[in-house]
View 1 (spheres, rainbow, N blue to C red):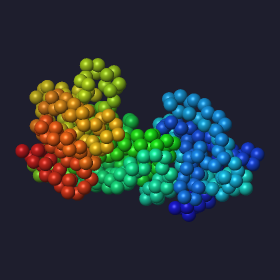
View 2: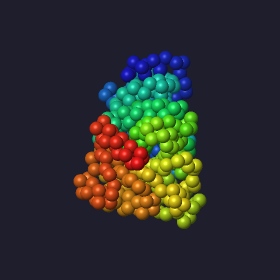
View 3: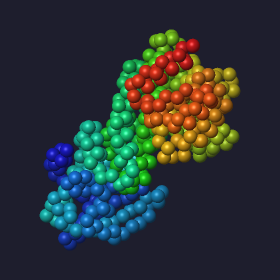
View 4: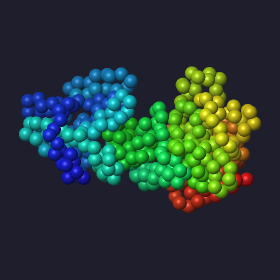
Length: 391
């Protein structure tokens, strides 16, 4: 890994920007607070990458608010602490695009170079991300991510290709989502450069939940041996546009798959003030070809007599946030069932489902599939989908 970084440093050198020589010390700027308009600085200490603020002898000399929850920090670091060290600079534009530089401090000077291999070589990006020093309990999420997300992302892309579609188009706020599907190693890296355990954990939870949701939708298409009627799949967070419309080679019928990973309440309220509080599960499948409907208006299809054959809610099974807790899940699925009246309803989980929650879901008429990354569960889920959509 370090040798590949050394290869990056064979360029003529670029202005260090965030790193300045001050007498025999260095001043380093970073902007923290997410992955938009921020700059994160990490130093390789021989064992792991650590944020500049945790370096020996480091002193915070200035802190300024930059708006939207971002803070600009300036640190003074003794020269001997950085001498000969590799430094990783990850910058995010205001639109969320990531830019990577590798720097080296030597003899009271700084040399920096762009390092595209980390964006182009996902295996290398994974190795680098795994070298970041844990800051807290996010380490358990990192292990879960590495054990499941690259596998599921690869399965999604395989189904897309076999359906005859060229790619998945990600619109609007789905930029990080696209990154996780197409470059899960680099996506892990963009989470690990966040400066607190809480920010890392939140980022990983969101990425994992979205990948599991899309992987479940892909399993629906795979179960039907579906041929895409469009040349791409479509993912957008704030509009009920179908993910894909397919023709099943198993049943000979057409189906429309709606995929809504995160419909944002403020946007729904702005365009549709009378929308129900809960507007759509993660995945809803109708027979026939259906066009897009406005935010929060999927239930209008049901009111016009078009009842979904299948609705699926997807969870990580990690009760770290409110929407994963059993009482919330039951309330949520009961609302969905009353609103959309699907002929079949399932809950899919990345991890084990709470035993008492499973009992309550069964009583509600919801089939449960836990540990969806396992091949055994995937086979059971495909059989269920085929039965639900072929009859």
